[in-house]
Length: 241
Image 1 (tube, helix red, strand yellow):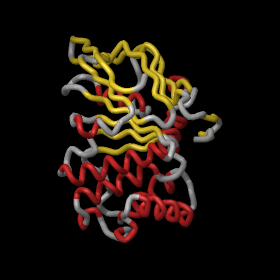
Image 2: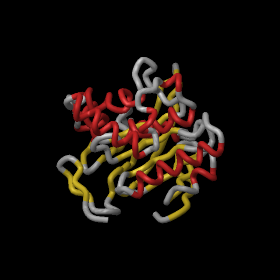
Image 3: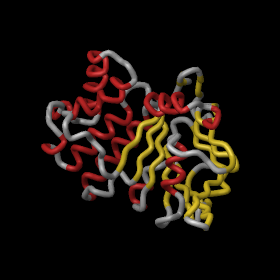
Image 4: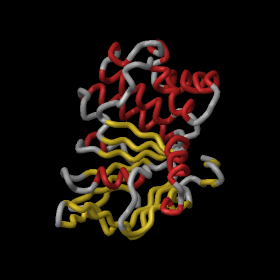
């Protein structure tokens, strides 16, 4: 795999794309301070597929929010493509989420008033791309997940698996290089769940980085590396470091 240009950064395969350095996240609950994550040091390479596993409350979703610039650490640094997220303005963080990071959720989060292709094109339109260009890229993304013939259907007319495939297309449309998936198969049957995992794996094979939160060990087996969290700390890993 050749080098990839991401914004101003050139990433060689295997170079660190997501880095956590001494990251800790505390939350205030009344008079009590709760440590949700950390201290945590972690590197995820460009093009790597990483699964996060652990019991409820172990810090998986907190870690994913930090990866996706949806939250900030109480201590330590989060670096994405060489940039310290703490040094970015709110506008820069919003632009980063639109252009570089795609999110896939258990609940699909498709807008019911938009067709499938309109849902996929929406992030590009919000980022200022012309409607025609956004729709062309959305059509390509829809085709890649086998949903080209469903482009004009509304979410309510799609099955759960079909909605999740649309959500995956929305997550990687445009120049995005990182997919963050939070229990994307939780609302699906096992057969449809495997289809979703194949789609995520295919994106990784194309050079995108995938971070998956899952409780299912059969789905975690699709990853290059499995990280186990308990009480906010890494307690074990499988696969290459």
